[in-house]
Image 1 (cartoon, rainbow, N blue to C red):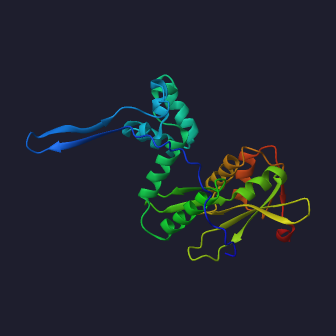
Image 2 (cartoon, rainbow, N blue to C red; image 1 turned 90 degrees about the horizontal axis):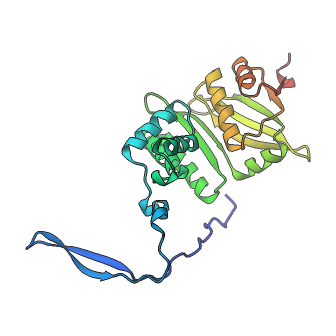
Image 3 (cartoon, one colour; image 1 turned 180 degrees about the vertical axis):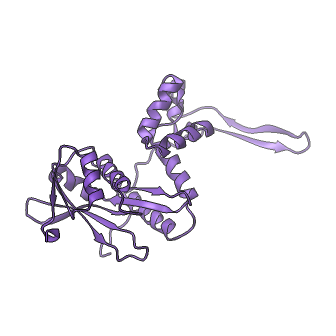
Length: 261
């Protein structure tokens, strides 16, 4: 709250003052569209025909492809893998008129639209704002069958940088349930070279089942570039232990001394 420099960085100006344009109008008397002005001369090089589909105005996930993407995403396929699947199916990158980010954005928009207006929508809007000011900020969530927010994970760019350096040993603290929805708040912690506690991420979970914890661990690996940890410290929750064994079979699991009685 004390940071006064909240302005976004200015983006590079890419406009060249090109006057090329094509204007049309609808003639009510003839009931036809007609050209009112045409300037064909550009002051810059044009994009080659074989690369036109990469321009933002020409990109877009079609309805059938979006339906396929939604079906694949529901069973756990990542946006990048969905894009590669589409490229494979259609026979090349030049046949797919969108990129991996377009797939991710359309899936996110679809999930946002399916959520009911609630505190969840306010929360996601806030996280979107954080992502706009911090390109490395990451969050992911699930929705329930009744279109409510299920599980939510988030971390900032600083947490990602810390994990790259100190992510060999992490601790999961899932003892907090003081929020209004009684959702387990999981804090993912570590320790740096100054022996100070650092935070790698947070999660609000719908329950404490093995399936939910597995989703959390896999999401953590996605944002942390699949850097596997070596030692995990938990509070002894059985579902968490099973999820750790499944996701990190080579990691050593230890119990926090506060939970040893």
